[in-house]
Length: 68
Image (tube, rainbow, N blue to C red; front, side, top):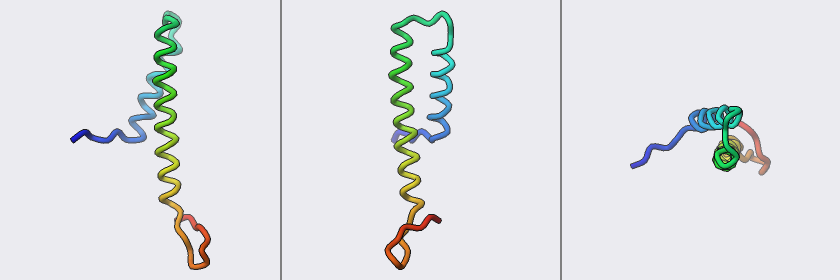
């Protein structure tokens, strides 16, 4: 079974991608490839953060949402 990548590991991959994009000798094709990869990583991070935020909310006795 594949091991799930943590949010911290995803942020690390994103930082590596940004560092590669900042290199002066990168080709346009490689830049575009890294940009697309970075956008996928950002979406993954946003989705995971949204999921955690939803799990942190709970309904109180009045039917309103409270945070833990």
